[in-house]
Amino acid sequence: MKKILVINGPSLNMLGIREPEIYGTATFSELEESIRNWASELGVEVKLFQSNHEGAIIDEIQAAYGKFDGIVINPAGYTHTSVAIPDAIKAVGIPAVEVHISDVDNREDFRRISYVRSACIATIKGKGFPGYREALEILSR
Ligand code: DQA
Image 1: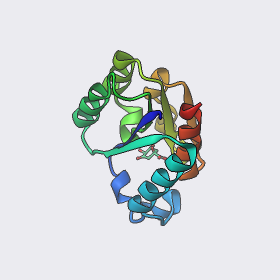
Image 2: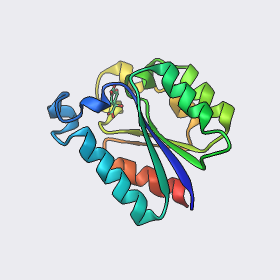
Image 3: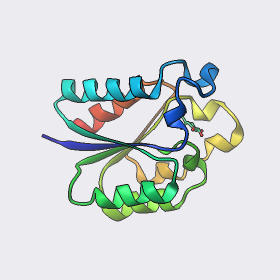
Image 4: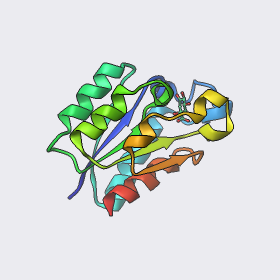
C-alpha cells in the first residue's frame, strides 16, 4: 500500500473560521476526515501533518525520506515566500502535488508566484477540499 504524507501549512488549522468567503465554512477537522475517507477509498495510507512553522514543515519533509511514496502539500502562505520548502522536497526526491483550496491565480498578484510548484509534479487549485482527493489520486497511480 502506498504511503502518502499530507502537509498543511499555516492557518489551515483555522479553516471554518478563517475568511469563510474564500475558504468556505467547513472546518479543518472536516477536511482531515475527508482526506482519511478518500485515502481509504483509494487504498492508500495517509499521515496528516499541519504546522504554522516553516522549519517544522521542512523537518517533516526530511523525515519522510525513504518512508513515504508521495507528498500532498498545501504550503499556504509559504507557497509564495519559501524557497526552503521546495528545496526540501527536491532533496528527498519524493513525488509531490501542490494543492490550494482557493484559485491562487485569480486573487492578489503575489499569490500567482509559487516557489513550491518547481518541486511538484502537479498543481491543483480552486477546487476546494476535493482538490486533496485529486492529489491523492494522482499519487496513488
Ligand atoms: C491557500 C492559498 C494561499 O495563497 C494562502 O496563503 C493560504 C491558503 C489555499 O489553500 O487556497 O493560506 O494555500
